[in-house]
Image (cartoon, rainbow, N blue to C red; front, side):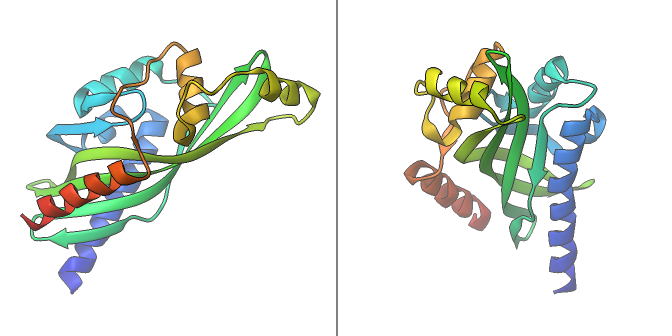
Length: 198
């Protein structure tokens, strides 16, 4: 029981460390969260984690306001040298639409396959599952109301609508395999549980 508690604590710290390192631009610490062959899939990127770091560095803002990941407490299942973690997250971003400053909050969760390595627990695979999001005015007023009435957000699926709009208007693309809450995420979880048991 003590070993399992230590493993769960170490995995929870690993997942929290990812968020802090990503948001603060601590790239070496971020790289150390994943295995050398680790992969990640989010709205704007899918592929090798090393390439994700390189892409993140290119768009990183060294001073606030910048994107912030609020990372919850993971639910962790450990089986030998493998673990599965599901973690609720919020992705916070500030941007402007037609000169109106808005805050975007995206609600999602990470599904992580995690393995024990000689250096400790590391993430082997991470998939973000998107649930819903919202826009709020930095300064409430008629300008924000007009933006919401006049802007067509409907080209982006509802679970990540405003996050996707923010990424597209900043010149980034959305990859075609984005996972949303529902049957697709249930199949993904079932496959991950099979991996854990295998």
